[in-house]
Image (cartoon, rainbow, N blue to C red; front, side):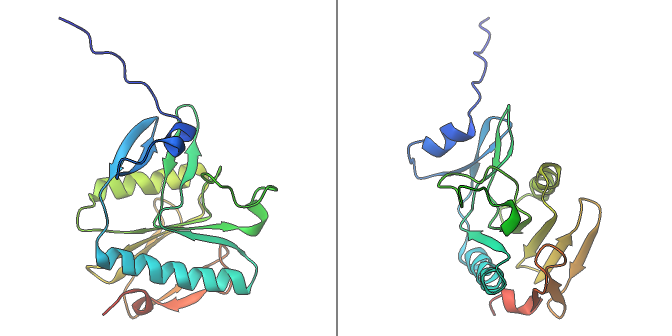
Length: 186
């Protein structure tokens, strides 16, 4: 019986340089994880959140907001690159060289995940744990189907806010406030 060849680990740099095969990937402990394309509602929610965060961050010179799966290297050897639907990096954490052309070399201060119908809850929980283990300070999980946002201050400190509630940026995005209903299309 033949022993299967060991799987070679992929680095963050190799993932970035990977030829476009029409798929989107994250890297988890050196292994490629294919990401299912998101639907229209998912995209609309992510775009609304990104716009609101970006306008606030720009107006108050707080940092940089990225959308469309801004990759962040969360771990090295083996490498993990996660791509939140929206990410925010505080001004004081941006590298001296500026916003990188490749992946962020650090975890976002705020990671936003918009849940799709194809997402498994266990995978979402693993992502939340990965973000916090790498130094993310706040995670928002937006659920279009229930029109709620789970505000995670740690993996165990989670508050669920309904569409009649208000999201705040806390000490990650000082002064940011928006009604939850603003992020969900009708």
